[in-house]
Length: 496
Ligand code: SF4
Image (cartoon, rainbow, N blue to C red; front, side, top):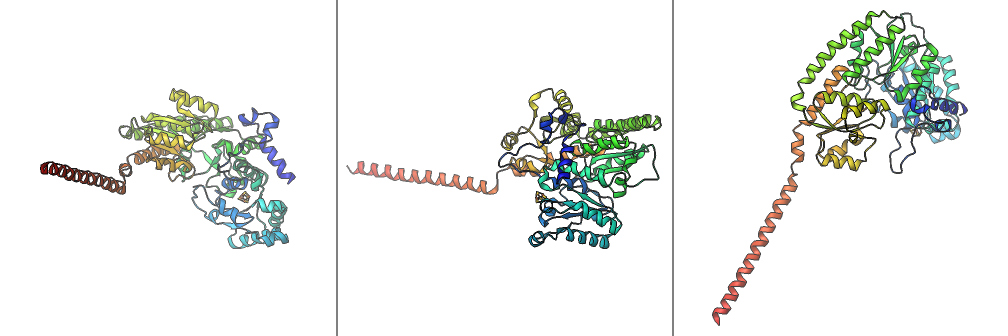
């Protein structure tokens, strides 16, 4: 436990993070997670965060040491894709029971599970994750992993991020620490070139990194390790020989990129593959860093030529959507670097942005969005579900782009919705990804289902007809009664 505490404090003190630097040392010790609001979902635990980061390493066996529920909670809840191995999608857990906890059989069961996996699957490595229960009963996974690695002759990597250690984001970073401590630098490659890079924090959601990799291939740039999307164990083990790194998702793995720079002199920059401008900028930055590290400067020219060609093709494809999407209003309810890149590209095809969340955006990104939208009232930190619903129900947006959590708000307001967060089913990275995003927006907005669902439901029509009939009938009956009354009165006067 003291080891875990030291790691957590080390991760909380991040010199490469501006937000972290702006805090005093006391505030830094508490990390970045905000206190929970009563009634709100807590989000994933540290174990969940570690698993999210490491599970996309596809040829590795991921063994969860703890009760069954922990694995069920976190299994493959991102849409990462693999171009080969499938072992990462197999669940392995020691499935600890109460009796085993009481009898102290955890470590023995873990050792046995490692042996079974080795014999049945012969993976290049096994990652062992601690969880709340096994950390609390004091199972020493580091020692068991060390012993098993010696006995079975394969890397057995302890991932010490039990759920109670903190938030999902802390778990992301502890996963990075596990890679630094046990994996990266453990294999020396014999094919190093001046054009090797690492992509850090890219999860290959829906296979979207495969839209970017061909661009790098054309420039002769080799991705030594994409961490973690579609990664192989050996790629990551030899990632310390890359010449430069691009950090895609800084909130998850900034500690990894910074420490690789310190340990192995691999400079990094933070960039994004979302949006046309950002993709071009990322390619430029990669080329520049490689040149700084000794690559032939001619790569800069080739990069500019490729950017010019690819941008022209992408804008031409996007222009086809302009007549259908011009003037359509989008509400962007997402976070991070995606906001700025996506806002820019959507505006280029004539789409109006009626609101965008900037909760996770950096100050520079916020400034860029402000300049683009020219009206600060379109920026919001976070919007309550009720406000989102009102905005959509009042017809102030034609579509909402967000994560799965808010999809039902849009659907309840009978408004088209598109998933642009981690569970999405379409790849949106790179030039082709941007075209795909606009295509999906077009499909969602013009889906004929919206005409149907906005019509009154059949039972509402039926109800309206019945009400009409009832009204008519009661009017008729009233008329009939009146007629009789008038007739009777007239009759009685006649008799007189
Ligand atoms: S590690 Fe702890 S918090 Fe996370 S799922 Fe397991 S029991 Fe729950």
